[in-house]
Length: 242
Ligand SMILES: [Zn+2]
Image 1 (spheres, rainbow, N blue to C red):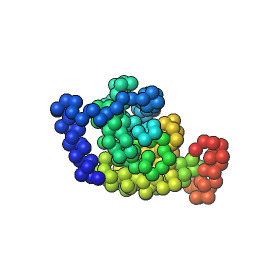
Image 2 (cartoon, protein in one colour):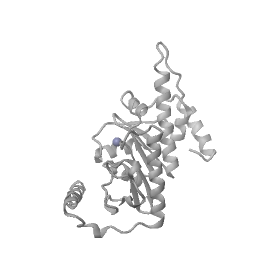
Image 3 (cartoon, rainbow, N blue to C red):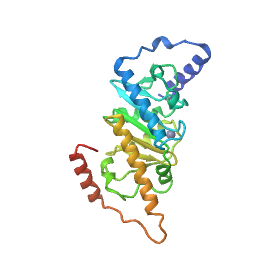
Image 4 (cartoon, helix red, strand yellow):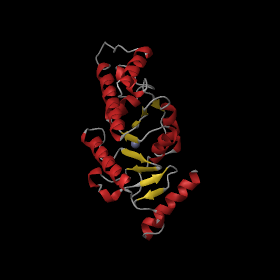
């Protein structure tokens, strides 16, 4: 698998110098994919405008059938056009576009292979990343952690873009729709781009809340019990949100 991946990358690098070799395997963008790409770019831009991402330090993907549309590596989101759609299959083979998919592709694919996710958002949001360096799990300062499946875990550190990081992330995501990545950032998924985005924003907000509450000298925040968080989660699901 690793060798295959390396071969593919080498092939792609060679292609950059050699022109259009290999692009015959790419197909044209379907209408549903073009629509999803527009929504993906809008979501990616929102991560920047809402302060969750600086520059291109995050990435967004959305699943359409067995194709995963994903933000390309190193291209500012405001420069992405409708014709820039980048798509891969569930094994990571590029089927759409010529721009290089994000280097965090292994995490996105691992989520799609293991869950019913239709969208994934990854950021380096500042408060969430700060919390990831302090604790192995975000303390339950607010019942909204119930909307993410329970107390949010921190996946142990591994180098970005590796299968090891994707594996650590999957462990932290068991029965959860979001987790923190130690000394790195956040990842959240949902049944839509909006839901994955909202979960990311809620997670960043809860991390900011905990940092704020726990920074008062001489006091420490009251924490909710596991039962209290679980009960809130049930109610939130009952309202058709989550
Ligand atoms: Zn990252």
